[in-house]
Image (cartoon, one colour):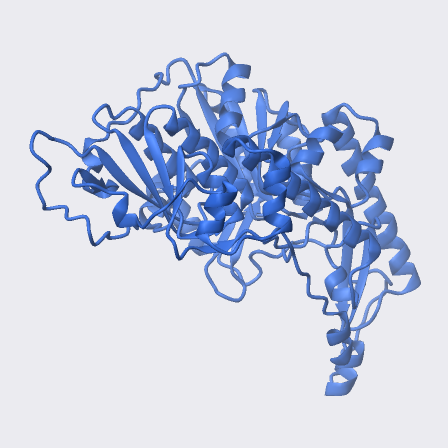
Length: 536
Protein backbone atom coordinates (compact mmCIF):
# COMPACT_ATOMS: atom_id res chain seq x y z
CA UNK A 1 0.00 0.00 0.00
CA UNK A 2 1.44 3.43 -0.89
CA UNK A 3 2.77 5.36 2.07
CA UNK A 4 1.37 8.81 2.81
CA UNK A 5 4.13 11.37 2.56
CA UNK A 6 3.15 14.16 4.94
CA UNK A 7 5.04 16.99 3.28
CA UNK A 8 3.64 16.25 -0.21
CA UNK A 9 0.22 17.84 -0.46
CA UNK A 10 -1.70 16.26 -3.34
CA UNK A 11 -4.19 19.15 -3.33
CA UNK A 12 -1.54 21.84 -3.54
CA UNK A 13 -1.35 23.29 -7.08
CA UNK A 14 1.75 22.66 -9.14
CA UNK A 15 4.13 25.58 -9.74
CA UNK A 16 3.19 28.04 -12.45
CA UNK A 17 3.68 26.72 -15.96
CA UNK A 18 3.87 23.08 -14.78
CA UNK A 19 0.89 20.97 -15.82
CA UNK A 20 2.12 17.61 -14.60
CA UNK A 21 4.50 16.52 -11.83
CA UNK A 22 8.11 16.42 -12.88
CA UNK A 23 9.17 14.03 -10.09
CA UNK A 24 7.42 11.05 -8.51
CA UNK A 25 8.00 9.26 -5.21
CA UNK A 26 7.83 5.47 -5.50
CA UNK A 27 7.71 3.47 -2.26
CA UNK A 28 9.95 0.39 -2.14
CA UNK A 29 8.81 -1.83 0.73
CA UNK A 30 8.17 -5.49 1.51
CA UNK A 31 9.74 -8.68 0.19
CA UNK A 32 8.37 -8.61 -3.39
CA UNK A 33 7.32 -12.14 -4.32
CA UNK A 34 8.05 -12.66 -8.00
CA UNK A 35 4.61 -13.21 -9.52
CA UNK A 36 1.09 -11.91 -9.09
CA UNK A 37 -1.46 -14.39 -7.70
CA UNK A 38 -2.51 -16.83 -10.42
CA UNK A 39 -6.22 -15.96 -10.47
CA UNK A 40 -7.82 -12.52 -10.92
CA UNK A 41 -9.78 -12.82 -7.68
CA UNK A 42 -6.70 -13.75 -5.66
CA UNK A 43 -4.86 -10.81 -7.20
CA UNK A 44 -7.74 -8.51 -6.31
CA UNK A 45 -7.71 -9.65 -2.68
CA UNK A 46 -3.93 -9.55 -2.30
CA UNK A 47 -2.47 -6.50 -0.55
CA UNK A 48 1.13 -7.51 -1.17
CA UNK A 49 2.96 -5.82 -4.02
CA UNK A 50 4.79 -8.26 -6.25
CA UNK A 51 7.92 -7.86 -8.32
CA UNK A 52 5.78 -8.38 -11.42
CA UNK A 53 3.57 -5.40 -10.51
CA UNK A 54 6.51 -3.16 -9.62
CA UNK A 55 8.33 -3.95 -12.87
CA UNK A 56 5.21 -3.08 -14.85
CA UNK A 57 5.02 0.28 -13.05
CA UNK A 58 8.67 1.01 -13.73
CA UNK A 59 8.15 0.22 -17.40
CA UNK A 60 5.31 2.74 -17.53
CA UNK A 61 7.48 5.38 -15.87
CA UNK A 62 10.13 4.92 -18.55
CA UNK A 63 7.73 6.08 -21.27
CA UNK A 64 6.21 9.03 -19.35
CA UNK A 65 7.56 11.96 -21.40
CA UNK A 66 6.49 14.54 -18.82
CA UNK A 67 8.48 12.86 -16.03
CA UNK A 68 12.02 14.00 -15.20
CA UNK A 69 12.91 11.81 -12.25
CA UNK A 70 11.85 9.24 -9.67
CA UNK A 71 12.67 9.13 -5.96
CA UNK A 72 12.84 5.48 -4.87
CA UNK A 73 11.85 5.67 -1.22
CA UNK A 74 12.98 2.56 0.68
CA UNK A 75 11.17 1.73 3.91
CA UNK A 76 10.46 -1.64 5.48
CA UNK A 77 12.43 -3.30 2.71
CA UNK A 78 12.59 -7.07 3.30
CA UNK A 79 13.60 -8.65 -0.03
CA UNK A 80 16.53 -11.04 -0.22
CA UNK A 81 19.64 -10.74 -2.35
CA UNK A 82 18.21 -12.57 -5.36
CA UNK A 83 15.16 -10.29 -5.60
CA UNK A 84 17.32 -7.26 -4.84
CA UNK A 85 19.49 -8.00 -7.86
CA UNK A 86 16.39 -8.14 -10.06
CA UNK A 87 15.31 -4.77 -8.65
CA UNK A 88 18.78 -3.38 -9.27
CA UNK A 89 18.52 -4.29 -12.95
CA UNK A 90 14.99 -2.87 -13.18
CA UNK A 91 16.07 0.43 -11.59
CA UNK A 92 19.04 0.55 -13.97
CA UNK A 93 16.68 0.22 -16.94
CA UNK A 94 14.60 3.10 -15.56
CA UNK A 95 17.78 5.13 -15.02
CA UNK A 96 18.50 4.96 -18.74
CA UNK A 97 15.40 7.12 -19.30
CA UNK A 98 14.93 9.13 -16.09
CA UNK A 99 16.99 10.53 -13.28
CA UNK A 100 16.67 8.21 -10.31
CA UNK A 101 17.52 8.74 -6.65
CA UNK A 102 17.29 5.99 -4.03
CA UNK A 103 16.59 7.14 -0.47
CA UNK A 104 17.64 4.60 2.18
CA UNK A 105 17.03 5.25 5.90
CA UNK A 106 18.55 1.82 6.58
CA UNK A 107 21.66 0.66 4.72
CA UNK A 108 21.61 -3.13 4.46
CA UNK A 109 23.31 -5.38 1.94
CA UNK A 110 20.08 -6.30 0.08
CA UNK A 111 18.78 -2.69 0.07
CA UNK A 112 22.11 -1.33 -1.18
CA UNK A 113 22.25 -3.97 -3.91
CA UNK A 114 18.79 -2.97 -5.13
CA UNK A 115 19.51 0.75 -4.82
CA UNK A 116 22.76 0.43 -6.78
CA UNK A 117 20.68 0.45 -9.95
CA UNK A 118 19.64 4.05 -9.26
CA UNK A 119 21.69 7.01 -10.41
CA UNK A 120 22.25 8.24 -6.84
CA UNK A 121 21.99 6.77 -3.34
CA UNK A 122 21.07 9.11 -0.49
CA UNK A 123 20.74 8.40 3.23
CA UNK A 124 19.80 10.60 6.20
CA UNK A 125 22.44 11.56 8.74
CA UNK A 126 20.89 9.18 11.27
CA UNK A 127 20.70 6.20 8.87
CA UNK A 128 21.16 2.74 10.30
CA UNK A 129 24.21 1.12 8.70
CA UNK A 130 24.06 -2.67 8.71
CA UNK A 131 26.65 -3.69 6.13
CA UNK A 132 28.13 -6.43 8.26
CA UNK A 133 28.57 -9.40 5.92
CA UNK A 134 26.42 -12.49 5.52
CA UNK A 135 25.77 -15.15 8.12
CA UNK A 136 23.33 -17.86 9.08
CA UNK A 137 22.32 -19.95 12.06
CA UNK A 138 20.83 -23.43 12.17
CA UNK A 139 19.31 -24.57 15.45
CA UNK A 140 19.88 -28.27 16.09
CA UNK A 141 17.15 -30.04 18.03
CA UNK A 142 18.67 -33.48 18.45
CA UNK A 143 19.65 -33.13 22.10
CA UNK A 144 16.37 -31.39 22.98
CA UNK A 145 14.29 -34.13 21.33
CA UNK A 146 16.26 -36.83 23.10
CA UNK A 147 15.46 -35.20 26.45
CA UNK A 148 11.80 -35.55 25.54
CA UNK A 149 12.29 -39.20 24.65
CA UNK A 150 12.16 -38.56 20.89
CA UNK A 151 14.80 -39.98 18.55
CA UNK A 152 15.01 -39.28 14.82
CA UNK A 153 15.88 -41.68 12.00
CA UNK A 154 17.76 -39.94 9.18
CA UNK A 155 18.74 -41.93 6.10
CA UNK A 156 20.34 -39.76 3.43
CA UNK A 157 22.33 -39.64 0.19
CA UNK A 158 24.87 -38.44 0.69
CA UNK A 159 27.16 -36.73 3.19
CA UNK A 160 26.10 -33.16 2.30
CA UNK A 161 22.34 -33.84 2.43
CA UNK A 162 21.37 -32.00 5.59
CA UNK A 163 17.58 -31.66 5.27
CA UNK A 164 16.85 -33.67 8.44
CA UNK A 165 20.09 -33.33 10.39
CA UNK A 166 18.80 -30.50 12.58
CA UNK A 167 16.29 -33.00 13.98
CA UNK A 168 18.60 -36.02 14.20
CA UNK A 169 21.89 -34.39 15.24
CA UNK A 170 23.08 -32.31 18.17
CA UNK A 171 25.43 -30.09 16.13
CA UNK A 172 26.50 -29.18 12.60
CA UNK A 173 28.75 -31.76 10.95
CA UNK A 174 31.90 -30.91 8.99
CA UNK A 175 30.30 -31.46 5.58
CA UNK A 176 27.43 -29.08 6.22
CA UNK A 177 29.78 -26.50 7.69
CA UNK A 178 31.96 -26.79 4.60
CA UNK A 179 29.13 -26.28 2.12
CA UNK A 180 27.51 -23.44 4.05
CA UNK A 181 30.84 -21.65 4.38
CA UNK A 182 31.45 -21.99 0.65
CA UNK A 183 27.93 -20.70 -0.06
CA UNK A 184 28.48 -17.59 2.06
CA UNK A 185 31.87 -16.98 0.46
CA UNK A 186 30.35 -17.15 -3.02
CA UNK A 187 27.44 -14.87 -2.16
CA UNK A 188 29.66 -12.28 -0.50
CA UNK A 189 32.02 -12.34 -3.48
CA UNK A 190 29.05 -11.83 -5.77
CA UNK A 191 27.80 -8.89 -3.71
CA UNK A 192 31.26 -7.30 -3.69
CA UNK A 193 31.53 -7.69 -7.46
CA UNK A 194 28.03 -6.32 -8.09
CA UNK A 195 28.53 -3.30 -5.82
CA UNK A 196 31.99 -2.54 -7.17
CA UNK A 197 30.64 -2.58 -10.73
CA UNK A 198 27.69 -0.30 -10.01
CA UNK A 199 29.50 2.08 -7.66
CA UNK A 200 32.57 2.36 -9.89
CA UNK A 201 34.91 1.20 -7.14
CA UNK A 202 37.67 -1.33 -6.74
CA UNK A 203 36.51 -4.67 -5.37
CA UNK A 204 39.06 -4.38 -2.58
CA UNK A 205 37.45 -1.15 -1.39
CA UNK A 206 34.02 -2.79 -1.31
CA UNK A 207 35.43 -5.79 0.53
CA UNK A 208 36.75 -3.32 3.08
CA UNK A 209 33.18 -2.30 3.93
CA UNK A 210 32.62 -5.85 5.20
CA UNK A 211 36.01 -6.33 6.85
CA UNK A 212 35.85 -2.96 8.63
CA UNK A 213 32.12 -2.20 9.12
CA UNK A 214 30.93 1.38 8.78
CA UNK A 215 28.88 2.91 11.57
CA UNK A 216 27.34 6.08 10.14
CA UNK A 217 26.00 7.73 7.02
CA UNK A 218 28.96 10.13 7.06
CA UNK A 219 31.39 7.20 7.02
CA UNK A 220 29.35 5.54 4.25
CA UNK A 221 29.60 8.71 2.19
CA UNK A 222 33.34 8.92 2.67
CA UNK A 223 33.75 5.26 1.69
CA UNK A 224 31.72 5.72 -1.51
CA UNK A 225 28.82 3.58 -0.33
CA UNK A 226 26.36 6.45 -0.88
CA UNK A 227 26.42 9.70 -2.85
CA UNK A 228 24.87 12.17 -0.44
CA UNK A 229 23.71 12.65 3.14
CA UNK A 230 20.30 14.33 3.19
CA UNK A 231 16.82 14.00 4.61
CA UNK A 232 13.84 13.10 2.47
CA UNK A 233 12.29 16.57 2.54
CA UNK A 234 15.50 17.95 1.06
CA UNK A 235 15.06 15.77 -2.01
CA UNK A 236 11.57 16.76 -3.13
CA UNK A 237 10.31 19.97 -4.69
CA UNK A 238 6.92 21.58 -5.29
CA UNK A 239 6.44 19.60 -8.53
CA UNK A 240 6.94 16.24 -6.80
CA UNK A 241 4.01 13.89 -6.20
CA UNK A 242 3.57 10.33 -4.90
CA UNK A 243 2.95 7.72 -7.56
CA UNK A 244 -0.67 7.05 -6.60
CA UNK A 245 -1.54 10.71 -7.29
CA UNK A 246 -0.70 10.35 -10.99
CA UNK A 247 -1.32 6.67 -11.67
CA UNK A 248 -3.99 7.54 -14.26
CA UNK A 249 -1.44 9.49 -16.30
CA UNK A 250 0.76 6.45 -16.87
CA UNK A 251 0.04 4.61 -20.10
CA UNK A 252 0.84 0.91 -20.41
CA UNK A 253 3.82 0.23 -22.69
CA UNK A 254 3.19 -0.85 -26.24
CA UNK A 255 3.49 -4.59 -26.69
CA UNK A 256 3.38 -6.84 -29.68
CA UNK A 257 -0.04 -8.33 -30.30
CA UNK A 258 -0.69 -11.90 -29.21
CA UNK A 259 -1.30 -12.98 -32.80
CA UNK A 260 2.42 -13.52 -33.29
CA UNK A 261 2.54 -15.50 -30.07
CA UNK A 262 2.98 -15.18 -26.34
CA UNK A 263 5.06 -16.66 -23.53
CA UNK A 264 3.51 -18.75 -20.75
CA UNK A 265 4.96 -18.53 -17.25
CA UNK A 266 4.38 -21.61 -15.09
CA UNK A 267 5.28 -21.14 -11.42
CA UNK A 268 6.64 -23.85 -9.10
CA UNK A 269 6.67 -22.06 -5.76
CA UNK A 270 6.93 -23.64 -2.33
CA UNK A 271 7.31 -27.22 -1.15
CA UNK A 272 6.70 -29.71 -3.95
CA UNK A 273 3.92 -32.14 -3.05
CA UNK A 274 1.63 -34.57 -4.81
CA UNK A 275 -1.92 -33.38 -5.53
CA UNK A 276 -3.00 -29.77 -5.80
CA UNK A 277 -1.08 -26.63 -4.92
CA UNK A 278 -2.06 -25.07 -1.61
CA UNK A 279 -1.72 -21.77 0.19
CA UNK A 280 -2.30 -22.22 3.89
CA UNK A 281 -2.80 -19.00 5.92
CA UNK A 282 -2.61 -20.66 9.35
CA UNK A 283 0.25 -19.16 11.38
CA UNK A 284 1.70 -22.43 12.69
CA UNK A 285 1.30 -24.71 9.67
CA UNK A 286 1.11 -22.05 6.98
CA UNK A 287 3.01 -22.07 3.76
CA UNK A 288 2.81 -22.42 0.02
CA UNK A 289 3.08 -25.73 -1.79
CA UNK A 290 3.45 -26.58 -5.46
CA UNK A 291 1.23 -29.56 -6.18
CA UNK A 292 2.30 -31.81 -9.03
CA UNK A 293 -1.30 -32.09 -10.25
CA UNK A 294 -1.62 -28.30 -10.49
CA UNK A 295 1.77 -27.72 -12.13
CA UNK A 296 1.32 -30.56 -14.63
CA UNK A 297 -2.14 -29.24 -15.58
CA UNK A 298 -0.70 -25.74 -16.10
CA UNK A 299 2.09 -27.11 -18.30
CA UNK A 300 -0.41 -29.08 -20.37
CA UNK A 301 -2.59 -26.02 -20.80
CA UNK A 302 0.43 -24.05 -22.02
CA UNK A 303 1.30 -26.88 -24.43
CA UNK A 304 -2.23 -26.91 -25.85
CA UNK A 305 -2.59 -23.14 -26.11
CA UNK A 306 -2.00 -22.30 -29.77
CA UNK A 307 -0.82 -18.76 -29.11
CA UNK A 308 1.83 -19.89 -26.61
CA UNK A 309 5.17 -20.34 -28.37
CA UNK A 310 7.45 -20.99 -25.40
CA UNK A 311 7.26 -21.62 -21.65
CA UNK A 312 9.15 -20.08 -18.75
CA UNK A 313 9.23 -22.40 -15.74
CA UNK A 314 9.76 -20.21 -12.68
CA UNK A 315 11.03 -22.27 -9.74
CA UNK A 316 11.35 -20.96 -6.19
CA UNK A 317 11.37 -24.18 -4.19
CA UNK A 318 13.61 -26.26 -1.99
CA UNK A 319 11.98 -29.44 -3.27
CA UNK A 320 9.84 -31.96 -1.44
CA UNK A 321 8.29 -35.19 -2.68
CA UNK A 322 10.48 -37.25 -5.01
CA UNK A 323 7.38 -38.60 -6.77
CA UNK A 324 5.85 -35.16 -7.32
CA UNK A 325 9.16 -33.77 -8.60
CA UNK A 326 9.49 -36.57 -11.13
CA UNK A 327 5.94 -36.08 -12.40
CA UNK A 328 6.64 -32.39 -13.06
CA UNK A 329 10.01 -33.23 -14.65
CA UNK A 330 8.26 -35.63 -17.03
CA UNK A 331 5.85 -32.96 -18.20
CA UNK A 332 8.70 -30.51 -18.80
CA UNK A 333 10.71 -33.16 -20.67
CA UNK A 334 7.91 -33.90 -23.12
CA UNK A 335 6.82 -30.28 -23.62
CA UNK A 336 6.59 -29.72 -27.41
CA UNK A 337 7.61 -26.06 -27.03
CA UNK A 338 10.88 -24.50 -25.80
CA UNK A 339 11.17 -24.36 -22.00
CA UNK A 340 13.37 -21.81 -20.22
CA UNK A 341 13.78 -22.37 -16.48
CA UNK A 342 14.36 -19.44 -14.14
CA UNK A 343 15.41 -19.96 -10.53
CA UNK A 344 14.20 -17.70 -7.74
CA UNK A 345 15.96 -17.39 -4.40
CA UNK A 346 16.13 -21.19 -4.13
CA UNK A 347 15.79 -23.99 -6.65
CA UNK A 348 17.39 -26.91 -4.89
CA UNK A 349 16.87 -30.66 -4.57
CA UNK A 350 13.40 -31.30 -6.03
CA UNK A 351 13.39 -27.67 -7.13
CA UNK A 352 16.38 -28.50 -9.35
CA UNK A 353 14.96 -31.87 -10.42
CA UNK A 354 11.82 -30.34 -11.99
CA UNK A 355 13.83 -28.04 -14.29
CA UNK A 356 16.58 -30.45 -15.33
CA UNK A 357 15.02 -31.02 -18.76
CA UNK A 358 14.68 -27.33 -19.67
CA UNK A 359 16.50 -26.10 -22.78
CA UNK A 360 18.00 -23.09 -20.96
CA UNK A 361 18.41 -22.43 -17.22
CA UNK A 362 19.03 -19.09 -15.49
CA UNK A 363 19.71 -18.24 -11.86
CA UNK A 364 20.78 -15.31 -9.74
CA UNK A 365 24.32 -15.41 -8.31
CA UNK A 366 22.53 -15.50 -4.94
CA UNK A 367 20.25 -18.43 -5.75
CA UNK A 368 20.66 -21.52 -3.56
CA UNK A 369 20.61 -24.52 -5.88
CA UNK A 370 21.98 -28.02 -6.27
CA UNK A 371 21.28 -30.28 -3.27
CA UNK A 372 21.10 -33.24 -5.64
CA UNK A 373 20.44 -35.90 -3.04
CA UNK A 374 17.74 -37.91 -1.31
CA UNK A 375 16.56 -38.24 2.27
CA UNK A 376 14.08 -40.33 4.22
CA UNK A 377 13.40 -40.62 7.92
CA UNK A 378 10.96 -40.40 10.77
CA UNK A 379 10.69 -39.40 14.42
CA UNK A 380 10.85 -42.33 16.85
CA UNK A 381 8.53 -41.94 19.85
CA UNK A 382 9.33 -45.26 21.55
CA UNK A 383 10.86 -43.74 24.70
CA UNK A 384 8.40 -40.83 24.71
CA UNK A 385 5.48 -43.27 24.63
CA UNK A 386 6.98 -45.32 27.47
CA UNK A 387 7.37 -42.21 29.66
CA UNK A 388 3.85 -41.01 28.96
CA UNK A 389 2.20 -44.41 29.31
CA UNK A 390 1.27 -44.74 25.62
CA UNK A 391 1.35 -48.27 24.23
CA UNK A 392 0.93 -48.51 20.43
CA UNK A 393 0.15 -52.12 19.46
CA UNK A 394 0.71 -53.28 15.88
CA UNK A 395 -0.82 -56.12 13.89
CA UNK A 396 0.71 -56.89 10.50
CA UNK A 397 1.89 -59.82 8.42
CA UNK A 398 4.77 -57.94 6.81
CA UNK A 399 7.78 -56.23 8.34
CA UNK A 400 7.64 -53.32 5.88
CA UNK A 401 3.94 -52.53 6.31
CA UNK A 402 4.40 -50.24 9.31
CA UNK A 403 8.00 -49.19 8.80
CA UNK A 404 7.14 -45.46 8.89
CA UNK A 405 5.26 -45.81 12.17
CA UNK A 406 6.86 -43.49 14.76
CA UNK A 407 6.24 -46.06 17.50
CA UNK A 408 9.55 -47.86 16.97
CA UNK A 409 12.88 -47.51 15.10
CA UNK A 410 13.50 -49.05 11.69
CA UNK A 411 14.36 -52.73 11.83
CA UNK A 412 17.46 -53.92 9.97
CA UNK A 413 15.27 -55.19 7.15
CA UNK A 414 13.31 -51.93 6.93
CA UNK A 415 16.48 -49.88 6.93
CA UNK A 416 17.94 -51.95 4.10
CA UNK A 417 14.77 -51.53 2.08
CA UNK A 418 14.72 -47.73 2.53
CA UNK A 419 18.41 -47.43 1.70
CA UNK A 420 17.78 -49.39 -1.49
CA UNK A 421 14.80 -47.18 -2.31
CA UNK A 422 16.59 -43.87 -1.82
CA UNK A 423 19.60 -45.15 -3.80
CA UNK A 424 17.24 -45.90 -6.71
CA UNK A 425 15.77 -42.39 -6.46
CA UNK A 426 19.26 -40.89 -6.36
CA UNK A 427 20.34 -42.81 -9.46
CA UNK A 428 17.21 -41.62 -11.26
CA UNK A 429 17.81 -38.04 -10.10
CA UNK A 430 21.43 -37.97 -11.29
CA UNK A 431 20.42 -39.57 -14.61
CA UNK A 432 17.78 -36.87 -15.19
CA UNK A 433 20.35 -34.14 -14.48
CA UNK A 434 23.04 -35.82 -16.60
CA UNK A 435 20.71 -36.07 -19.59
CA UNK A 436 19.41 -32.52 -19.23
CA UNK A 437 22.75 -30.82 -18.60
CA UNK A 438 24.77 -32.98 -21.03
CA UNK A 439 27.06 -34.23 -18.27
CA UNK A 440 28.15 -37.73 -17.34
CA UNK A 441 26.28 -39.33 -14.48
CA UNK A 442 29.59 -39.74 -12.66
CA UNK A 443 30.17 -35.99 -12.92
CA UNK A 444 26.67 -35.25 -11.60
CA UNK A 445 27.40 -37.53 -8.65
CA UNK A 446 30.53 -35.47 -7.94
CA UNK A 447 28.46 -32.27 -8.00
CA UNK A 448 25.58 -33.92 -6.16
CA UNK A 449 25.84 -35.92 -2.95
CA UNK A 450 23.33 -33.47 -1.48
CA UNK A 451 25.65 -30.46 -1.77
CA UNK A 452 24.20 -26.98 -2.23
CA UNK A 453 25.73 -24.39 -4.54
CA UNK A 454 25.25 -20.71 -5.18
CA UNK A 455 23.98 -19.65 -8.59
CA UNK A 456 27.44 -18.27 -9.37
CA UNK A 457 29.07 -21.62 -8.61
CA UNK A 458 26.33 -23.47 -10.50
CA UNK A 459 27.23 -21.50 -13.63
CA UNK A 460 30.89 -22.43 -13.26
CA UNK A 461 29.99 -26.10 -12.77
CA UNK A 462 27.59 -26.35 -15.70
CA UNK A 463 24.41 -26.75 -13.63
CA UNK A 464 22.92 -23.60 -15.21
CA UNK A 465 23.51 -21.71 -18.46
CA UNK A 466 23.34 -18.05 -17.49
CA UNK A 467 23.03 -15.59 -14.64
CA UNK A 468 19.74 -13.74 -14.88
CA UNK A 469 16.21 -13.33 -13.58
CA UNK A 470 12.63 -13.70 -14.78
CA UNK A 471 12.94 -10.65 -17.04
CA UNK A 472 15.95 -12.08 -18.87
CA UNK A 473 14.36 -15.54 -18.83
CA UNK A 474 11.37 -14.23 -20.76
CA UNK A 475 13.76 -12.67 -23.26
CA UNK A 476 15.51 -16.03 -23.75
CA UNK A 477 12.13 -17.69 -24.29
CA UNK A 478 11.27 -15.05 -26.90
CA UNK A 479 14.55 -15.75 -28.69
CA UNK A 480 13.91 -19.51 -28.74
CA UNK A 481 10.37 -18.93 -30.02
CA UNK A 482 11.34 -16.31 -32.59
CA UNK A 483 9.23 -13.62 -30.91
CA UNK A 484 10.07 -9.98 -30.20
CA UNK A 485 11.03 -9.10 -26.63
CA UNK A 486 7.77 -7.16 -26.37
CA UNK A 487 5.69 -10.34 -26.78
CA UNK A 488 2.99 -10.63 -24.10
CA UNK A 489 3.28 -13.09 -21.22
CA UNK A 490 0.60 -14.90 -19.22
CA UNK A 491 0.65 -17.06 -16.11
CA UNK A 492 -0.59 -20.51 -17.05
CA UNK A 493 -2.97 -22.15 -14.58
CA UNK A 494 -5.05 -25.34 -14.84
CA UNK A 495 -8.22 -25.03 -16.88
CA UNK A 496 -11.25 -24.20 -14.72
CA UNK A 497 -13.58 -27.09 -14.02
CA UNK A 498 -17.32 -27.18 -13.48
CA UNK A 499 -19.74 -24.25 -13.43
CA UNK A 500 -17.49 -21.82 -11.54
CA UNK A 501 -16.05 -19.10 -13.75
CA UNK A 502 -12.26 -18.88 -13.98
CA UNK A 503 -12.35 -15.70 -11.87
CA UNK A 504 -13.21 -17.66 -8.72
CA UNK A 505 -12.15 -21.21 -9.58
CA UNK A 506 -8.62 -20.78 -8.24
CA UNK A 507 -9.82 -19.30 -4.95
CA UNK A 508 -12.36 -22.11 -4.56
CA UNK A 509 -9.69 -24.74 -5.18
CA UNK A 510 -7.44 -23.20 -2.55
CA UNK A 511 -10.22 -23.08 0.01
CA UNK A 512 -11.17 -26.69 -0.69
CA UNK A 513 -7.57 -27.91 -0.32
CA UNK A 514 -6.80 -26.21 3.01
CA UNK A 515 -4.67 -28.62 4.99
CA UNK A 516 -2.67 -28.62 8.19
CA UNK A 517 0.18 -30.29 6.30
CA UNK A 518 0.63 -27.52 3.73
CA UNK A 519 4.26 -26.57 3.41
CA UNK A 520 5.51 -30.01 4.52
CA UNK A 521 6.92 -32.53 2.02
CA UNK A 522 4.56 -35.38 1.22
CA UNK A 523 5.62 -38.96 0.64
CA UNK A 524 8.19 -41.14 2.35
CA UNK A 525 11.18 -40.38 0.12
CA UNK A 526 12.07 -36.71 -0.20
CA UNK A 527 14.38 -34.61 -2.34
CA UNK A 528 14.19 -31.59 -0.13
CA UNK A 529 16.34 -28.71 1.11
CA UNK A 530 15.60 -27.84 4.72
CA UNK A 531 13.55 -24.62 4.70
CA UNK A 532 15.17 -23.49 7.98
CA UNK A 533 18.17 -22.18 6.02
CA UNK A 534 18.07 -18.37 6.28
CA UNK A 535 20.95 -16.18 5.15
CA UNK A 536 21.04 -12.67 6.57
